[in-house]
Image (cartoon, rainbow, N blue to C red; front, side, top):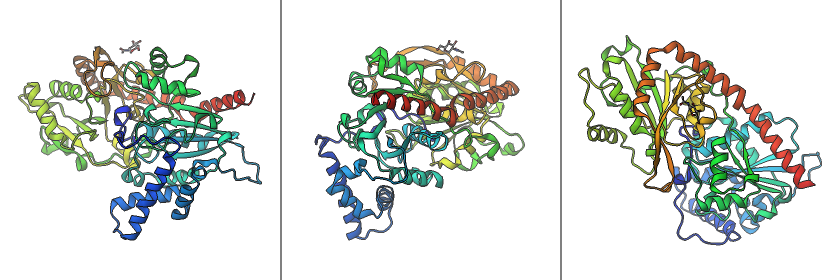
Length: 502
Ligand SMILES: *[C@@H]1O[C@H](CO)[C@@H](O)[C@H](O)[C@H]1NC(C)=O
């Protein structure tokens, strides 16, 4: 979940490695070879416990036990590692496997999404005829993210990592952007790990944030037996872009409504972690509790932080008793968000209100997953005027936490935003994307003037906003709670097994 942020689109991918094009057959060798080299280096130089070494140790804990022998074993017989081993089990275990390959150890949108699926399936699939296995794929491991996970998630990861499956009985789910699928366009364990036809079925689970899918990704989608997407928006954009209609299936995302339950948490003290960037902290802030607008996003143009700042700073002044907190992290940029914001305000020619700027705070420290609900709990409203979202993870988290949400009424979030459960922000127009990997696509320009109106409205109608927040949680529970989505996934898996067994 990262949830400390949201979607991980193609642009978030690790940079393609120019030395790459070894064939997919060779790749596992290269992969394990590098692990071994690092391990040996680490041992022979007996490095101190730097993060680097800790990261490597994380890999071992996760990938092998006892590390070096299995790594070596994997190197000598890579097929073992790719879960080809058939360990006959006297207890009648289900013969089938679902191997979920995703950036479990990375943080970010795909990471949190994949976690939500395996947790849901682990806890809620009733007598399934398949076992679950997982594999890290699609992005680099983040030690910080791993360390911030609750113990039960770590344990589950290690347990599922060690599930042994035979390829013939396995459905592989490649949960990542299509560039990571076999053959990957950047360095990652390929998904599926060997040829597509070696497995019972191969499913691509992906999404996108613009109005279309690029031709390379369409081609990769069409290599899959199925393409699972989270929303109706994606069903239509994928099919319009040329993905075979018969392959596209909508599978919504689960949200852990027990973890994100407002009754379970005390608010985090935002003042202790937020850095003031605009305006000033009032001395009597203890007397008058400020109305807190929260936004969570990676620092990229797509997220509409410019729209948010402009609307907020033009609409409010210090006299309004509001505060805007931006929980953000770098995205191909440095961490100097304060200067970026000040620079943006200067360039935009906004006039400082006579009573002073309404305060803007930046939180750029890493918030561990376990503390995230307390961030939402400390807010009065959540706002994200994004130009395009795959799913909008922070939005559903905020909704599960019963917050009134103001979010752009376009792309993925249209799956769940309604007039009753939120404040859908109207779009001014569609715009052409001029730079970056989305160039040539289109996305939405959320309305600055309507965002101003909605933020003011929420501030002035706290009771109405609360009712919407309650409805939001109710909708998250009835549509996306883990047991409901686990059921949907299990049914699709059963269908596939039935079809291929015929
Ligand atoms: C949001 O968009 C949908 C179409 O996707 C539209 O039917 C609905 O009226 C819009 N809601 C608002 C508040 O603009």
